[in-house]
Structure formats: structure tokens, C-alpha cells
Amino acid sequence: MTHSEEIQKRRTFAIVSHPDAGKTTLTEKLLLFGGAIHVAGAVKSNKIRKTATSDWMDIEKQRGISVATSVMAFDYADHKINILDTPGHQDFAEDTFRTLTAVDSVIIVVDIAKGVEAQTRKLMEVCRMRKTPVIVFVNKLDRDGKDPFDLLDEIEEELHIRVRPLSWPMEMGQRFRGVYNIYEGKLDLYTPSKQYVTQSIAFTDIHSPELETHIGDLATQLRADMELIEGVYPPFDTATYLAGDVAPVFFGSALNNFGVKELLDCFIRIAPAPRPVEALERVVEPQEDNFSGFVFKIHANMDPNHRSRIAFVKVCSGRFERNAPYKHVRSGKLMRFSSPTAFMAQKKETVDEAFAGDIVGLPDTGNFKIGDTLTSGEDLHFKGLPSFSPEIFKYIDNADPMKAKQLHKGIEQLMDEGVAQLFTNTFNGRKIIGAVGQLQFEVIQYRLLHEYGAQCRWEPLSLYKACWIESADDDALDNFRKRKAQYLALDRAGRAVYLADSSYVLTMAQQDYPSIRFHFFSEF
Ligand code: G4P
Image 1 (tube, rainbow, N blue to C red):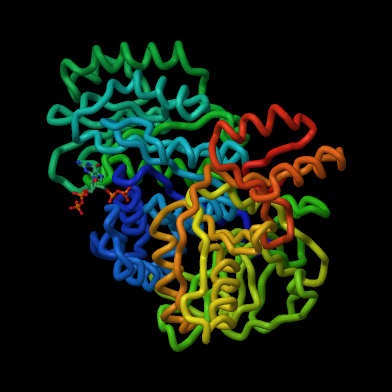
Image 2: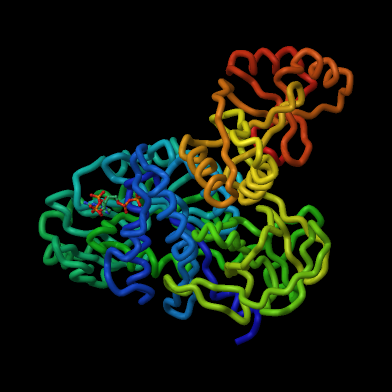
């Protein structure tokens, strides 16, 4: 197979949802189709508990298993599918956002009863920013929920994307009869309690009287619905989907394995193969001969005695080879990897080669940072791995004076992994950790102690947001710095950050200093 054919058959994507909409169940059913797992429940048992009371035991468990489930690759119908797992817990949202930078497309799962929820909205914002093509899977049709037309309107309004149904449900809940597969022109009929589509009938002309023989009285309703759909939504056009302008929508029930194969079959046909990736220097095409890739995730080893980590690299172009020398652009050093791993099904395996679209796991002893680039030699810096303004802030203090060095090292390494963000207050020199959720502070404290032998103490800090500031007007910036001295900090890259303690104060600052730009994420 040629290099270009290898790349063309790859589909690298993530399934995302608000917790409980059915992401894990759908992932699992896809893996079953791909033959990557053989029993239902294999993925599910690995899931972190979603309650707010998750403690570090859960976190530890999660860390252990999520190496195995971080990437799930399988072959299906001549394609190589890479599903990138994202943590369901909202406290790890930043991890999810970063994973989205490594995918070429996304499937969003929406619960028919709950509709668009908070987390779905946030995730979609990231997809929109990056113009990532999105397919929506409306789940749990075996339960009663919203009217499908109303739900489509809600998705358009709430997610700010146009939609185009490619399948259409016939009733729902107890009366659910199945879906009309618009994309393929098929009637997929449902029998409750069977683990597959029980009857799939090619059916392109829904005006044929034969429709009645299959679905009886529902035929009239289906014809009326289809007429409305054709009237309201323009015909499906793959180009608008690939541009991130239109999201095709499928209906089904992941738990009952209904509509899942149809989704997968359509997905491999329309979803993009690896796409070009923007670097600061130029746009990198997947088909290029030279290898390039970036680190989007770093995973610490479960075993505290071995402080090794795995850096997950998305291959952006060319072919990655085991033992070949690659340039670590940030340090300028050449590195070789004797045991890179790929993630086939749920097993980790050493691989000799990987292609654009693939994810390789590289054992790391502390050289990598999130966002680092590896290349065959060229100096490239991939864009699009921004840090978002955290939501919770705490001063971190040393609780064991004998272990100051360990604490420092631990904090630096955990920040390299992207566990949270570190700021240094320029007024008092104290270190501030910013995170999205409470759980991250627990993880940090626990890992500092168990992996670095260091003890930390938290002091709550009531802040609203951290904004990166910049201005072409040096006087205004100087003036601002003097006035807000107590609220200024530096991020790890040495950039100026304003710590606003309330939304009111921030609005006032924006009004008073119109020549200063306040950014809510670190890439601008
Ligand atoms: P998540 O990863 O998005 O958080 O959702 P997950 O797949 O864990 O699904 C959340 C709950 O919804 C699970 O029930 C799951 O069984 C159920 N579910 C998923 N798909 C469907 C569907 O098509 N129909 C119905 N009726 N339910 C569905 P749970 O009670 O929380 O977990 P469990 O006891 O089943 O493991």
C-alpha cells in the first residue's frame, strides 16, 4: 500500500458528550463492530465515576486504565479507525479540549430527552473554533424525549451550526419502530430487546404503497416528516460537512445497538482522512514525506516508583519509524524511540511505523511538554493548543521545608503534563495554581506526595478569571501594571496575566484601558 493510501484510509476522531448522554456506550458498540472487543461492558467498567464525590482512588484507577483506553484503534471495512477517548468528568475539560486538537472529526452524542446540555455547548465551541467536522448522534430513542424537529432547532440554535438529518425516527420510547435511513435509502426496523437492527429493507421511494406493508399507519407520518425535511433542509452536501458548516444528524439507541452500524458506515464514507495542520511556519500536509507530529497529552505512570510517562504524539505528516532520529524542536535535541507504542483495541503494542492520523505513545522521562513538536529535522511549531483561563485558583505553599526542591520539580513536571496551570504573582512572588475543577487540586496534592515525596498546602484565592494581556501602547500597559500591581502574574512562558477578582472589575478594566487586549485563552 502506498504512503498516500495508508493515510487516506485513516479516520481519527473523538466522541464527545455531556456526561450520561451515552458516549461510553456508543464507543463500546463501535469497538464491538470493529472486533476490537468481544464483550459489552469492557469499556464501561473502566469509566471514572461521574459524581462530584469522586476521590483520588477513582482518579488513580482512572489514570491506570485510561492509558489503555486513551486511543482505541481498530480496522473496519478497509479503514483504520482511531477513536480518541476524552474524560467524561468536567473537571478534566481541558484534557478534552486538548484531545480535540488531535482529531480530524468529532461525533457529538445528544440525549433525546435532555437535548443540548452545558458541556455539549462548550465542546462544540472548540470544534467551531477549529472548523472540525461534526456528526450528531441523537441517542436513547428507546425512551420518550423531545420532538425530533424541535430538537434539531435546538441543536442549531444552541450549538450554532446548521444541521441535516440523515436518518429519521419513527416514533420513540415504547412505540419506537425504527429509523428511515435517509442517507442510504433504507428502512431500519427495531424490535425492542434485540441487540441489532432486526430488519433492514432497502427502500428509496417512500411514496410507494409498499411502505404500508412494512410500517402500517406510520407510513403517512413518515411521508409527511420527509416532505417537511426536504422542504426545510437543503440536500446533504459532504463539502459543507467537511467545512464544519453543517452537521449531519443520526438517530438511534446506543444501548440497543440501534443505528450504530448505520452511523459507522456513513462515517467512514464522509468523515475526513487526516487533514493539513497549521504550524507557525507553514501548513503541513499529511502526505508530505517527512515526519512531523505534536504532543497533545502526557500520561503519568501509575507506578509511583517509576516516574516515567507516556507522551501521546499525533502524527501530522509522513511516516514515523521506530529508532529513527527525530528532532525535539523545543530543545533542539535529536531523540530516538526504541519502544513506541500504538493502541490496537485495548492493547498497547510496540510499533515499527505509524502514519499521519495515527497516535503513538512515546515513553518519556520528563523531556516532553504538552504542545512540543517532533520532526525529521525542520523547525516547526504547531498551533492550536491554547490554555483556557482556569476557573478556580489557589496559592500553593510548601508544607515540608525539607522538600522544597522536590515540590518545585513536581509542580514543574505536573504542569508540563497539563494537569493544571501555574502562575507566579509578580507582586508577592507566590505561586498560584489555576484549574477547571476541584478534582485537579486533589490530583496534584496526591501525586506530589506519592510521586515526588513533597507536601503542599492550598490557600483559596477568590479570583474570577486569569486573562493574558497585551498592548501596542506601552504607556497604557505601564500604567495598568502600576494600578493593578497586586493582580498581575506571569504564566510559565513569562507572559503577562491579569488576575481579575470579579467580572465587574474585569469589565471596568476593559473599559478603562481600551488599548489593552484581554485574552481568555493563551493563544492569540
Ligand atoms: P457517558 O459516557 O456519556 O457518560 O454515558 P454512558 O454511555 O455511560 O451512558 C449513561 C447511561 O445511559 C448509562 O446508564 C447507559 O446504559 C444509558 N444509555 C446509553 N445509551 C442508551 C440508550 O440508547 N437508551 C437508554 N435507555 N439508555 C442508554 P447507567 O444506568 O448510568 O449505567 P449502567 O448501569 O447502564 O451502566
